[in-house]
Length: 324
Figure 1 (cartoon, rainbow, N blue to C red):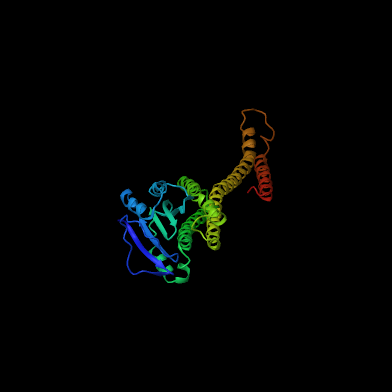
Figure 2: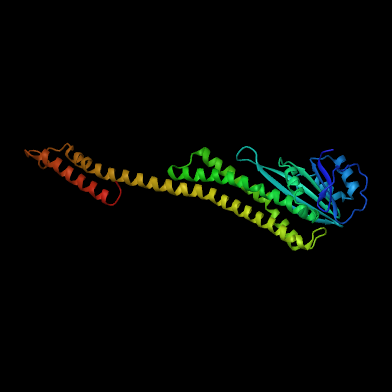
């Protein structure tokens, strides 16, 4: 059995003995008591024992075993079924996704985790030190785990923002190389998938805040509102990051066009300057017997004087208008 932890809590205090998951239906408990069971990647047979023990709906169990569900909230009688998605960086720039499904019913909360390396044991230990909060019931635990999942998005976004900032600063100095451009488009593809997979978390949290749902006390909605706020901030940062990556290529292209324009103007200016001696040399290189000043003693020096004067004037003019 892939049970990470299974304990019963009464009035916010944990029982010393762990719960046994053997398919035996749970007897009715005091309303101040609930079971919190954490499962990691269980198989169908193990989930069947949990289903029998807590009376879970087969369709919800089937969805919990499918690790590619989108975030959602569904109601099965008196049981609330919630699916959340986790995200973390696997190799620096590739986002890996996981899924955590929750069954919240009268007297129990069951979490089924796939793909995420962030276990809930530390969170459980923290909550066990806050008996007054834990005594509020499984809806408060649901909020705490959802908040834990959403907070896991922030380190991911922090690292991607650092990568984007480095590429943005480098693009100011030189146009990105082909490998860098491919890297930018890979990151944009990763962020589009992040928006598609994690985006429904916002709608899911809105439903927990605004809709009357079984096992969610109206007084607990303020806690889910805080989770909703964190999701919205994470999505806003993601969209800003996606815009930054798009702007890097656009800005680099504009800067490169500007640099190419400066080079083109400089080449045009030197071409205009060099055209003067070329034209004069071309004229006096013609094979005609009678050309003006051919027999003049100072003709050579006069031609050089004209060339230097005109070229110098052009150079000063181009310098004045910023072409050189």
